[in-house]
Length: 184
View 1 (cartoon, rainbow, N blue to C red):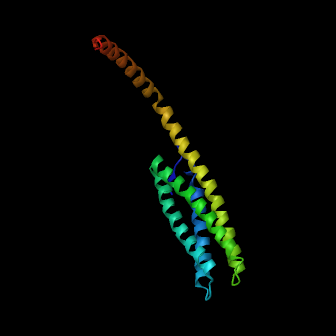
View 2 (cartoon, helix red, strand yellow; view 1 turned 135 degrees about the vertical axis):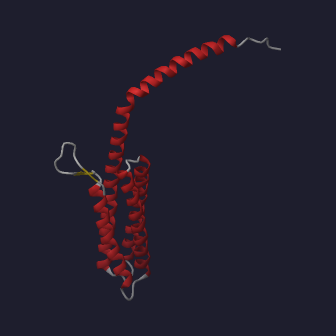
View 3 (cartoon, rainbow, N blue to C red; view 1 turned 30 degrees about the vertical axis):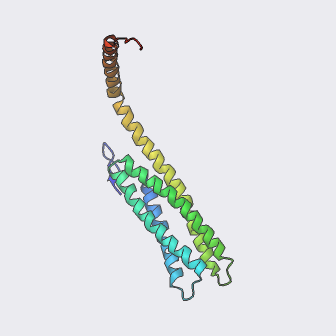
């Protein structure tokens, strides 16, 4: 994450999305540890094996979305932040689906309940964290847009007035040059 210094000296400040970045890494590490630990067990049932593989895939997607978040913060890029927000929303839905698969695995005869319940809790907490992270990334993205708009408002208004004046002159010229043709 990029650390910026405050104008006028003092303590350096971090981006408001820094906690989102590190929180997501922590949750990915916890869920990867549980999922890989479940897969290493000698007799993992199929209804637990498949959701554990899905958790690993979703965590890898989550790490790739963090690359977009990092680029969005470092370059102040709205497109990278948008891709992070869209990936986070998609991962929320996929994690809820995976939590439902873990809940179904609880009812199998060979269920390992402590791993299933642990992975349900971690998966749902990661989905809840994704909702909070996407909301904070959206507000950060809107703040960047507002900063850009307030700086460029004067230039945009000048261009709009000049454009309106030039269109008014050209439209009058075009309308005076059009001749009415008799209909046949």
